[in-house]
Length: 113
Length: 116
Image: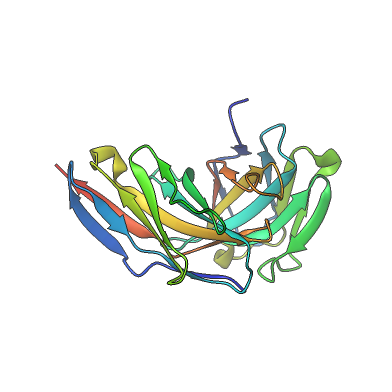
């Protein structure tokens, strides 16, 4: 069974600063994928970034980067230069064997002007 | 193609009534997923299809729930004899399928169900 843990229920960040969202995972599958999604108040889950378990380098997508530490089973999301539009819920998720996603409980981010 | 679309966006129903939701995936995607999300929680997996075949169902999917994907295109999720505990956001997602680089799932905007 897979499990995702997000220990930060909510975070404030000042506009233009960076913020790190924590995510730890547990799985016995050697091959898995790690994802981060953003969910604004409108409800849609927006894909942000993906990291494969065999990828050697940390994934980056624009202002988003994933700090993947395989030995620690962590996949933290770093958002650089925060913008007011980054205020949302953020979910870490994992799939194993290319099947369903298992989500964490989410972290609410509020960007302050 | 504009992405995954779900209909309706909102549904209010009386307890005991049946409801049906529709999901239209991205056209070239073989896999289609249904998730349920309650307030303040992450989405929970319900079921998924590979083309028209339903490959896995969660224990959350009681016998009052049924999902179909005829011809491997759109999918419907029906809830019979709704209960207040069914109130949630029902999210649909699609992906190309298994395999490296293909598992990224794109989500629709969801159907918010309120059972009164």
